[in-house]
Image (cartoon, rainbow, N blue to C red; front, side, top):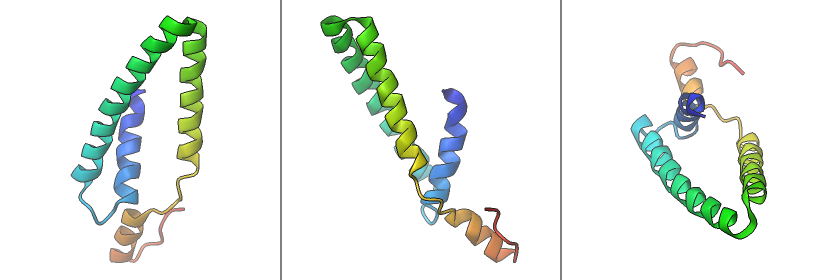
Length: 93
């Protein structure tokens, strides 16, 4: 999933536009570390309690939930609109 990192950083920069890109990318990195630790601990607990099939199904459910949450993010490209306004170019939709 490392290939999705640049896409996520660009989306975060677009959605938090007036803020510096470093702030949004730093928060994304920090939250990825926290979620990684939480999911690793939970996965270990699920394997110990229910076995690997149930643990894998739970992680698949988490991936589907993340995909749905990503899908409902509003299409508000602030940085792109500001850049287009500066150069009198229509924003790409």
